[in-house]
Length: 164
Image 1 (spheres, rainbow, N blue to C red):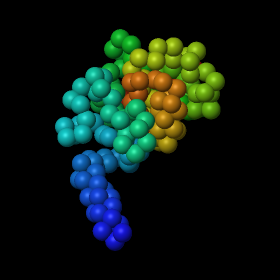
Image 2 (cartoon, rainbow, N blue to C red):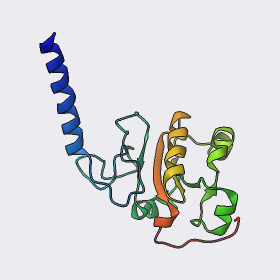
Image 3 (cartoon, rainbow, N blue to C red):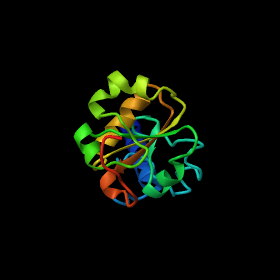
């Protein structure tokens, strides 16, 4: 019995050490630490559209994306940028071309707003908390190519105001 417990402990500790070594460091604090970050060739594909990484801890199909990567994807065919903040926050400032789908409305309105479950979907909010929750929710609904941009506060490019 002691040998079995020792073997299990060794396996657990080895797994933790291995996963800690293969997870890239967090760059801006905007992403979920369980999410594989882009730009590390050991853990993510070179082309972020080709195959989304899968978060190891919970098996959710989404990954963090940098503003630079998002900017490259925005405007490409079959790519949607989704703001999951409130209507008031969206009116104050949002990324051009984004669609408003508040986090509270994801369950009830996602399928009517985001009709193609194979589309590339980039979600963002103010700081990254709600976008992570939205990505998890959308993954559970069967959306396949999800990216979490994190927060608009880290977006270094143009923003616009108003509801359109």
